[in-house]
Length: 359
Image 1: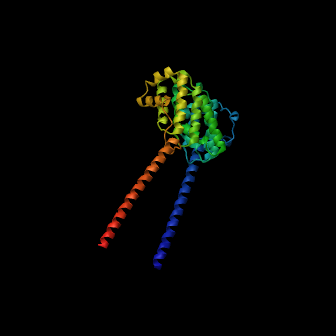
Image 2 (image 1 turned 90 degrees about the horizontal axis):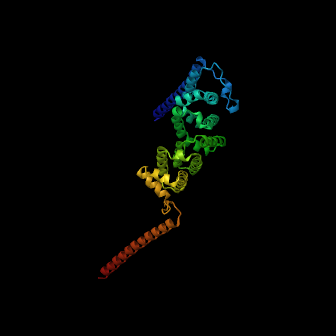
Image 3 (image 1 turned 60 degrees about the horizontal axis):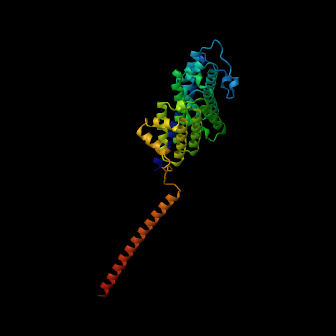
């Protein structure tokens, strides 16, 4: 018994030692990676000034680049830093400030690094960073991107990438706009206002409608309000484009089909608004060219003779309460009948047994 206890203690001690060694090894590896990544940057003559690591640089204070700036090398280093997860977070902050400078003074270079090198997925990660300062400054960059008017972008080369970025970022912005951190919430809302004011693409409207499929009521309300505002910013001719119209009806039909009260009411408002902007005749002719499923759902939503309010299981409507009461009464009556039949059988058996005893 004593020998078993001693063996257990030895095993525990050995396990503890192994765990401590493993933790130390992991820490040393992480620190070594950070040192190596920063040494690599320094050795390649890309030293970031401390001023660029500041979280409080206003747009007006962003300085122009020197005339001899090697933008090709700069683009490569910024991408390397962003993709490096082990580097100190202040380098990511500096990269955000560099991107803001490029957007302000060198738009063509910004488009190449942001869209051409496809670093925008990394921007999503930085918005969700545990470093709130880093998240806030990334949102500032996003707001400055959306604050640029559409003609600033090369429609042929960059529109597809801009659309992809918008589709990717809208759900995150809506989530951040309703978060608990007030300064993050403020920046996210500013981004969304700039989005609907300047990124007046039909795909932006479609992405906002698709964002309504979330489960949080406050996120649904925000996505709807933004989509409603954006409808007013889109022209009749733009909404009538066949491909856009088909995709738009498909997005509206998909949310309408969810059959939840909070979705249905809002979708009907948006459909009616688009119907009025395009005019009913044009709307109906375009709708006939859509898919059968979308066509039927949209017509149902616009039909005044159809009650579009869904009958949900958790509804408190009079009809549902009446149905529930009838079901309960029916169940109670069934139970009473079963009890009565059981009691009659018991009484009959008792009487038969008593007769037999008397005999």
